Amino acid sequence: MGTGTNGGLRVALVGATGAVGSQLLELMDERAFPHSELKLFSSEEHGGDSIEAGEQTRPVGFLSDPAELSDSDLVFLAVQRPAAEAILGAAAGPIIVDLSAVSLPPAGTPFVAPGFTAREEVKELSRFKLFHTPHPAALALATIINALGDVPFCAATVMLPASSTGHGSISHLVAQSADLLNGKLDLQADERQAAFNMVPFPGAPELEKALVAQVTRLIGIAPQLVLQSIQVPVLHGAAITMGLPNASGSDAWAAALRAAPGVLLVENEEAPSVVDAIGQEALLLTYSPGTAGSSLWCVFDNARRAALAALWIAECLVPGAAEKLN
Image (cartoon, rainbow, N blue to C red):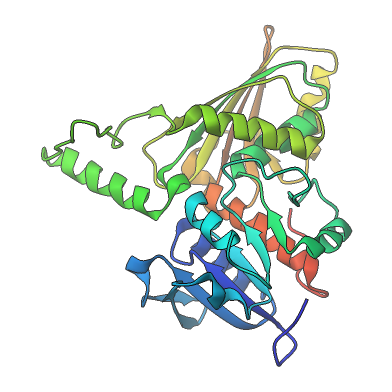
């Protein structure tokens, strides 16, 4: 991997003003990720803005041509899938970390995550010049299922916020909520109410299929997983409910979750809310065994965990970078 004039990486972040991009920028500052140059790009409407990060104000440009990324060593794509595909098909030269994560990358394409891929393997896979990261919900499900071991069957509901579909969805939810509270909401004939409503996630069948496929690729076996995805009227933070029948070894599940990396098992106190998870790096989890089976409640900061997975890849590639993420 090439480096800039002072020995650090030349880094570009596309989607810097979005939910995941802003988290990634914040984490890079917190962890003092080494770079000699950091270029920030966003969508056209945000081009020309600036971002306050740490003690610096950084300009944000509009990426008009993927060729503008060619002089970078490392590029983070923190944008929705259509925008990511356009860049992936045209950018050449840098190592790209794709965070769009709504489908399963083709076989043979590096698909990595902390807790499931060795750091040495990440270094070896850098020859492909491309890394894909899992959807944060898929990584959460894989982490839990992997901790539990041989799970015969699992039914799960994934509840995703506005931030999971981009900055525009956040603004749309805020505007709709204000209009509804003021008695001014006027929906178009084909428009679905997002404010104060819960509905199946847009494109739910495709997303659910992709999440199960990503979990399978992460844990190495196909789980008996029935999945449903729901869009909930919150801005940030996600939740998962899981139901599992009792099985051989289920009496050890609590201890397994307690010991799992990246999991904080909340016991003997009130179950955490989605708001409690904002800013947290771990999955916050409660486990409730019963005579008919067990239930789990999991909340997590979807944007922060997506950013963490991407930065972990970068840290694996840089000698002397911060310690391994949980």
